Length: 255
Ligand code: NAP
Image (cartoon, rainbow, N blue to C red; front, side, top):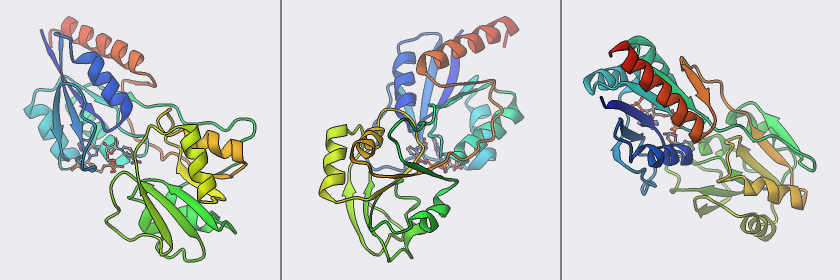
């Protein structure tokens, strides 16, 4: 019996998990992307792109497609889709697994100032003159009134909404290297870096570069996520193994 899994993605871990599961016969995986970036890195196997229409839309999609299990491997800051998954799975009884990379933690030599949310960053910029803003494009309107600071802004696609009045845009996507990040910080004489606590290796090089150069980091804490997940794991291997258990239980239940 083949189980049908929805893999909510948009992250490197989701792509890695899709690659692990794609050759398997006992599970058919449909990866889902929001469709936010113009040229997304596509996972292996079947892919659908675009929102579901909130928790209600996702519930209808899951039941209509006879999905047996949902794996939420979205970014730790993607709270909308995770809330929809928790709600739709709770309502339908479809098991939900959460794959979420661990947050970054400060180590010796790090100079981090933790802030609760993007909205709190402008008040925490202090006297920094040249700020590297690497928070994605969605949070940029928060900085539209910040005219005392100059920003180097890095995004994957060009911003569509309001941006800081004094800024230079760099379009790029990870993975980044420590050498590259160090050169970027030096060339632009950056004296403060602002980042979300995304975790994972793809974009961690900027933190090592800050450590080396003695540049402080404004670290935006992760938002809380509502979850009804039967298991929350942090690695692709753990997710595959928990998926096996769910599939086995389903076979035992005769579902
Ligand atoms: P979000 O606030 O949770 O999502 C907003 C809406 O986009 C959701 O309500 C849903 O629309 C749709 N959506 C999000 N992820 C989806 C998915 N995987 N498949 C189908 N629809 C999805 O998320 P976000 O912060 O805008 O992030 C969008 C995507 O980019 C996520 O998939 C995430 O994994 C990825 N990403 C986010 C960040 C970040 O910093 N937030 C960084 C890297 C990658 P409906 O309500 O219509 O279903």
